[in-house]
Length: 302
Image (tube, rainbow, N blue to C red; front, side, top):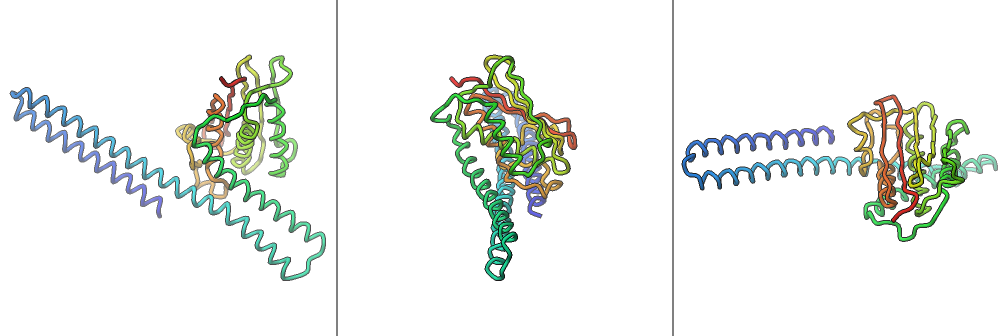
């Protein structure tokens, strides 16, 4: 209901702005007809008219953006609340069970393992929110270290297999180093590890039916390293390919209501890529046809 009301508000603002522009045009045309012989008044009137039109257009754009931003903010709050509440409720249930009745050793270990998984989910959510705050500052890392990016990618792949309980064939990895022994870049290891993990986690998240992800690392020349993460999941409409990197933005939340997340993952990836002098972009042929997200980094940051 809230989304519908905000859509109505957007339509109302646009309609009101259009009506004001039409009224201003009609008023100005009438004024020009009455005063067409008075050049100075005519000139000043046209300037004032253009200023009024520009103000109305800018005001309408600002209001629509604010309404959409508030809507995204509310979606983010709901997503974060769900991401925090669900594991907390699970941990509480396990603890209450352990407190109220005796359980055998095997079941107790199973409870402990489930609580650890829920705790990791909580930590991941908190870290995403904190990293999004840091990413918004758009400052380059204080220290850059030379590191083997291909080794870092393989570490992230193993972590993703463990975290999402994936079979080895679910994540395919290939690399083309163009004659180099390694894909070395200069960067912050933790931030780059976060960016790569977010790309893989996002691909897994939006492959609800069957996880089949190809991770490709390429060194096309002496100055760049390119990482591609290709999934065969839900895909992305063409008009949303650039918007998915905005903060709080999530693709098709109604049709994918069961997908977990805060809408911060790709925003963090883009911020980290920019900090390191690189870029990230997405490609998709449409809904149901999978997505390829490409992260391009320079071999060194000036």
